[in-house]
Length: 132
Image (cartoon, rainbow, N blue to C red; front, side, top):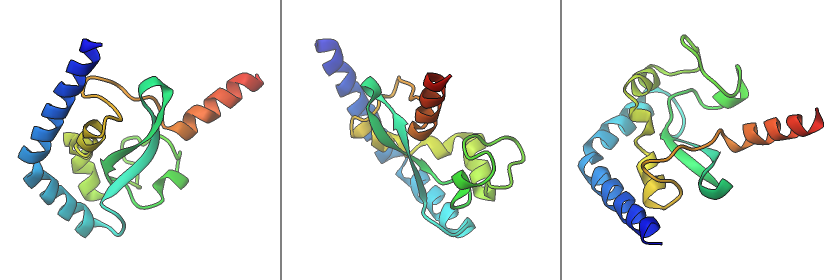
């Protein structure tokens, strides 16, 4: 019980302070994404988090709008034409992951924790596994 409480307090402190300290980086990255290509600054996708509960992960958009409906639809490899110029830099530096601090602040995930595949992909794998 205390362990869960302390982990949550840790997540709140670290994510809150990180959002404040990194706000200039957020501003520069947001501006760069907006000027690089049309569409929203952030990419949201259903993921599976704590206890199998779905949540919308938040990232800086690194691909063209609608990229999940073209190409492989799930994974992006080296030289993928759907990745924007700014998105390529954000991915190489992992700056595209910074908005997940908001997910941590909201309690949807933790700092030291992994998320499962996107929810749609997990449903397909589960359905295909059951039908085999």
